[in-house]
Length: 159
Image 1 (cartoon, rainbow, N blue to C red):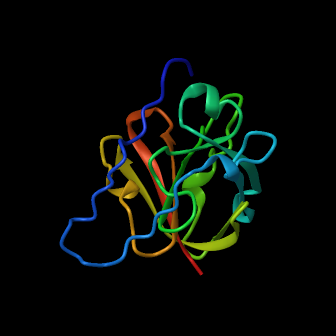
Image 2: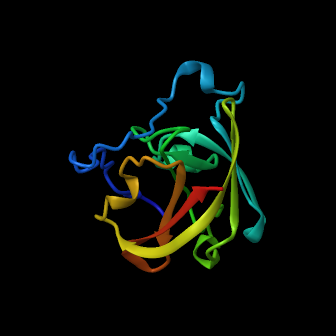
Image 3: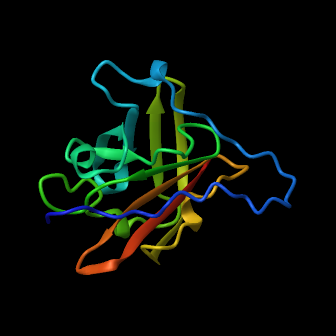
């Protein structure tokens, strides 16, 4: 696959009327490991362990998974994208996850375990998965093979 990969534009709105506290932790220079990555994502159900870098452009995703700039790195909704085929197919089996499967996210801030609550095929233009949240969750995106207008969106909440 060549060319650029489009992921949803970040939706930083929370509706403005909920009054709930929204979790958010910005990426700062002290959160990077010496190798340039922000953390390690592990999903035992699909045998995945990959480093996560800042950004979702092609050069970043060639190294591993990519953290969506503008989304939280820790508290709230942490959004990560990855390729599902080619040289880096880290997220190739993402769509096979099931509710209850676990995801572990380790950064310099600590380690959190999340439990999958949904696996959905969404339109590329659907930004709802990137919205800020009051709970701690991780949202993963990858392309749907041979369906350019869609993305797999997996959401997992801290357990």
